[in-house]
Amino acid sequence: MDHFNYRGDTLYAEDCEVAKLARQHGTPLYIYSRATLERHWHAFDQAVASHPHLICYAVKANSNLAVLNVLARLGSGFDIVSGGELARVMAAGGDPDKVVFSGVGKKVDELEMALEVGIHCFNVESAAELELLNDVAGRLGKVAPISLRINPDVDAGTHPYISTGLKENKFGIPMDEAEALFLRAASLPNLQVKGVDCHIGSQLTELRPFLDATDRMLALIDRLAENGIVIEHLDVGGGLGVTYNDETPPHPDKYAEALLQKVAGRPLKLIFEPGRAIAANAGIFVTEVLFLKDNGDKRFVIVDGAMNDLIRPSLYSAWQNIIPVTPHEGDSCLCDVVGPVCETGDFLGKDRQLNVVSGDLLAVRSAGAYGFAMSSNYNTRPRAAEIMVDGATASVVREREKLTQLWHGEQILP
Ligand code: LLP
Image 1 (cartoon, protein in one colour):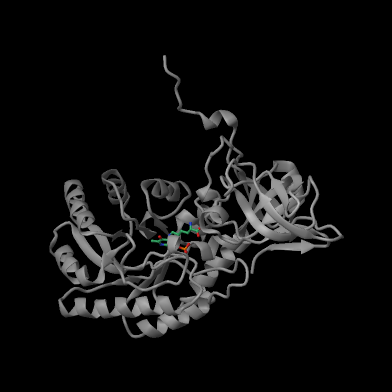
Image 2 (spheres, rainbow, N blue to C red):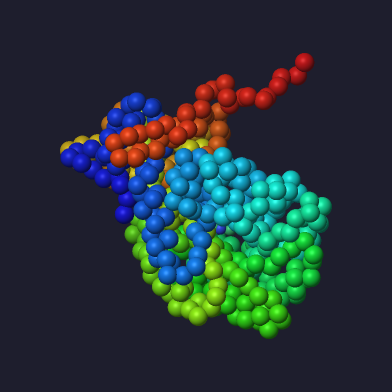
């Protein structure tokens, strides 16, 4: 459930009229709902309330400072994948002691930064990273808390670009190398083994792959115990899907119930890294119709938002609902909603039934995750403004970029 609903004949974001926000702040525009973000975070947190746990929101899904701050105020932890994300978390008031650091390519300066501020855990993804972290920690006189991210080789049944838990993917450590690497980690002086970690993919709509991966992780934890290695936490990653169209992903309650059955009786803290499940349906992307164009077979609705603003449809053939902000009476027709970028792949939606005229506003739903965060300046387009609504109050949480910002730092030859 979210807080983007029609009242009468026009769309609202909580108690704010979307058309008014678009007039005031211009388009294209991202609008986030604080109440929806909080609702989704609590849904996760309450689902596992009976068991020791930490919810580490995956910053990559939406890293706006206001989003991070709203979650930090709830007591959220954060899953980061770069020094930049760590800096954002801290700028937003997040607690470094609740940060887990994932990613296959961490650099020395990023490891140093995370050691200096004292994060909760490094999710180490290779033998080489393990040795490097031990060296860097030793040099700084620190002990690094670590988990090893294991690749459980399960099929998440999702888009190949966002599937991460198969042996052929670059992520994690193969299961058959896990025990030896844990033994190595336990023998290194500047590391402290804390956990086992996995993340098998994103936009999962079935429980089965999560549960298969958990079984494999628990069996590993038992084998480690036989070797004297005590694991304090199991990080199950993120990946729980959302409804974009007709998907029926499990509710966090169902997911938690099934997981808790598996870990019952074990003194294992659970860490979750949800991104999409918290942010996707807490945001919309609002764009204005510039022109209509017919080519005989097809109608193109040309809008001012493009693939540089929201790349999911172009990159993953992702389907996101496109709705009129203020619907008209009358017949709809089949349309492709396309942007101004000079690429055939620049579309927000294909074959949609719409009834629009130039000047209308459209809202792309479920745009709060992997929307703005993946946007770029391609075609020298300033990135969109971001607004967060909280009841009847709307705040600009990121200004629209100005043209001169786009070439800031560039130099012409003398
Ligand atoms: N933890 C790790 C280690 C991850 O790599 C990811 C996402 C997450 C947590 C959060 O996953 P979530 O709960 O959001 O599914 N850009 C793609 C999604 C890429 C996901 C990358 N990793 C999209 O727009 O669909």
